[in-house]
Amino acid sequence: MSAGFHFSDPKRARDLGDAIRILAPPDPFKIVHVCGTHEMAITRNGLRRFLPETVDLLEGPGCPVCVTPAGHIDMAIAMAEAGAIVCSFGDMMRVPGSERSLDGARSAGCDVRTILSAADAVEIAAREDREVVFFAVGFETTTPMTAAVFLDGPPENLSVLVSHKQVPQAMGALLDLPESRIGAYLAPGHVSTIIGTAGYSSWLEDRAIPIVVGGFEPLDILYAIALILRQHRDGAPEVENGYPRAVSSEGNPAALSLIDAVFETADVGWRGIGTIPNSGYRLRPEFEKYDARMRFTLELPEERGEIPGCRCPEILTARAVPTDCPLFSTRCTPLSPVGPCMVGSEGACSIWFRYGGRESL
Amino acid sequence: MTAIVDYNGVRTTARLDALSEEVAPGDYVLIHTGFAIRRLSAQDGEETLRLFDELSRSIGVDSSVGDDAGETGPTSPDNPSDAT
Image (cartoon, rainbow over all chains, first blue to last red; front, side, top):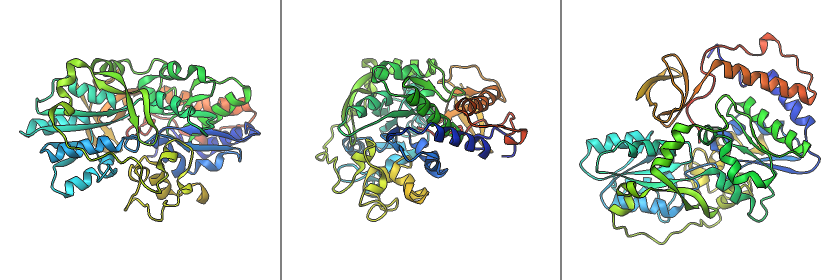
């Protein structure tokens, strides 16, 4: 594009890089982000080279398909085996369940379809006579779309397997894990478009660490890191908006009311972390008729969350980086992934494999 | 309610029921999985660049951003599609 805003312009990047260097903390300081799109922008643009020696920047549980528990994938597969058309986003297809992935089920003859939007599931259901299950994954950015579809009164043969998750609660839970040593959060831009900066306050207000919302262009990320380091230097941690062109304090009321109309908050499991209180959703009683789990009697394999040798649980909790894992780029590659972080296009391992990790930058 | 949106030359439909702002033809919107979630304005884009410079200056970076540092104009102020 010839015209437009240059959110990657080198002069400003150098200035923000200088600011980050001036603000470098004397002691080791770990910044965690929770968004695959952030990791993509950081790694693809080589932004870690702007960081002082003392600063580490890691992806935590920022890949929605990576944190989807194997047991939910098992349920989706069992629904497909029971004759339903199972639809989900492309990244979900290859994530391993306990015995196999949705892709594996498709190879075995099940009708599993990739969609780009919750609205696509409605169109499929309208065309087909069979039961259609929408396997709904994603954070607060994606939950309103699932809600909108079911609020619209979709075809009767459409149901939903709800696996949506809420980011601030996971951010809080991560702080309490042993060895987490998280100094600050770079908060996700488009989740924050929905929940606003207010969405973090209630869950993280008493945590006394910098939480800065960042956008996705290289300059946005450098800016947010500089804001984090300034808060740290000044000893004044707070929730700060580094992405005001897309994020307000109250968020997106229309999207929030869609979520609230259809879902209520529930305790849910995160792969690699375990159950986090209030970190997900279930359908409100008046929408339970769309609950896929009520429509099928399922025979499920024993849930196998752990994958031998795979360090995804530590990577998803920002306690390791992909190159810490002995399987990374040896036994585990995007063509032949072992763990979920190598499958999801927003997974840290997949991104580091594609663009090179810290060592090569 | 839906709108036709153009993303780097690709035309597609986006639903507007998760959007809190009014939009008109020609506006820029942030799209997530087929739904517009926020209207973006050129002024907010310019304001962002100003914030970047202000921070650099406040930290003591000798910033002298000239006109060549970035055109501003009413094109897509962001990568509006893929995000978490």
